[in-house]
Image (cartoon, helix red, strand yellow):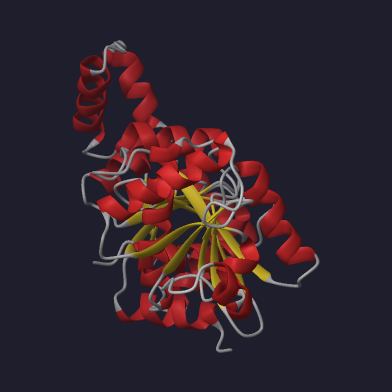
Length: 328
């Protein structure tokens, strides 16, 4: 199978986006910025204190030519972003002082979120220094969710020897209700197609196939399937399906003949985080799949989180994915 990451990078290069790196004082961010610019994958701005960034780059012997630096405290948009954040919090009944709003948006994560929301950049990638909670808070408060989507979630691209899959939600939402599970399915299907070019075939997974068992946990998946199908009749979505019925043609022919998804699913939606997290790690560790992610989805603009144990290559790859998911 062709290297999907090479394909994603090629897509990013063909429609170059402006991506922000708010954890700019991390040496991995600076090194990744150099690679991203040199390889033409994206236009990069490091967000943070300009003097500190330049000092760090000099110590690393990394040249910053062609890399932009955005210093929130010096930027002309600081006051307008503070006003916008102040008014947005007030409108939600979460009143803060203007001084608190200003201090919040001075934070590189929040400044990056406001910058992306304003359309001044196409996306942001952070998390090599910042916690997942801080990245998600900045994304949700600074950017907000996509219209029609109720939840911020995530997925993994799972690379098998002969097939690509998306698994969701493996990292963010512990126990989605039926509406949230439907939105996770829709977001994952759309992003799977954006990244791979393949038509998504979405299986809503359970321990039952088409009524083979009865339980309230199954009822949630059945209801989520109906909601997703109603919201997006253009997508191929079926459920409830056991994993073997979802991906094994012979089993699908016995358990759910006539399904356009069963036996050939490539987007697997797990009922909760327990199942999804265990499932992707089993595929990765026992099945030797390559797992790319988690990729954050559901925000109105791409605002991604990294593991704090990430490598420079992980940042480069995530920026490429961010660029492609932000393409229209």
